[in-house]
Amino acid sequence: MTTGLYELLLRGLWLTVQLTVFSAALAAAVAFLAGLARLSRRWIVRFVAGVYVEFFRGTSALVLMFWLFFALPLLGWQLAALWAGTLALGLSYGAYGSEIVRGALRAVPPAQREAAIALSFTPAQRMLRVLLPQALPEMVPPFANLLVELLKGTALASVLGIGELAFSAQLVRLATGDSAQVYAIILVMYFVVAFVITRAMRLLERRAKASVGRAPGRSRGRPTRVPPGAIDPAVDATATVGGGTAGVGTAGGASPGTAAAGGTATGGDVA
Figure 1 (spheres, helix red, strand yellow):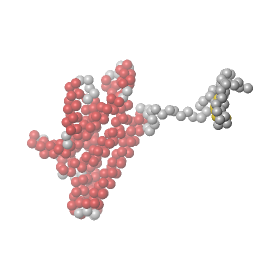
Figure 2 (figure 1 turned 45 degrees about the vertical axis):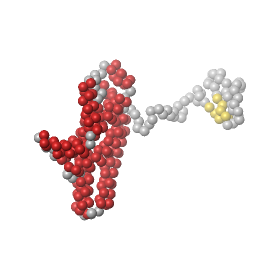
Figure 3 (figure 1 turned 90 degrees about the vertical axis):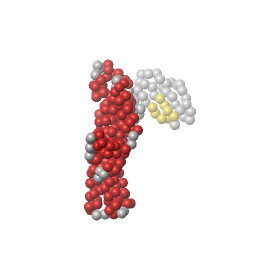
Figure 4 (figure 1 turned 180 degrees about the vertical axis):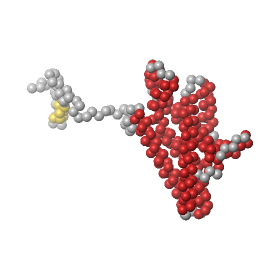
């Protein structure tokens, strides 16, 4: 391929990154709004949020792009192809993201909410200072997966004539006739961008866990390892004798020792 064709692919990659960023920003805003709305005390708010989630989660993003770009002008509104694709992707993936937000907030222990109520926090303070900081580390991994899916979903925007990566690859394939090389190149491009996204989201996850005092990669139920010398030998000392264990009583105590030499023997005074 010539240099000009490579430049065409790079311009398509840049447009794909732009479309991903714009759609992700809209999807994140919609996800948090809809996710919080589904936890509202007012039934009408929960109902409206539920209708939105079920509608956009159950419809095709491709058909929504067609409707926004071709049918919406019949109602008097004309959207540019880039913004029609951004709106369709943002609304569709925001519906999936709202369930991530709702599930993470539900996963916060009820005792945290009760403690915030006992401290006379307002609902906004409970959400911003107690619930969201603890739920955010649980949101990051599924949001990372959703962001990668959104990156791959930007290829749907090629049907609107947007010159993103898939559309540019199609033009280069028609110009060169070499399908294998062109599609291998864009596969690598998609992988590189997805890899950068996953690394960035993993860093964000570590920082989110550190902000609430949770060390990354450490199990909550794992016992803490006691450093050598932390326990007074006079209080708890053990020694191996003849393949068994001999227990030494505490200083000033009357605890008898035990010895095992091919068997176990109890009792006996310490000389």
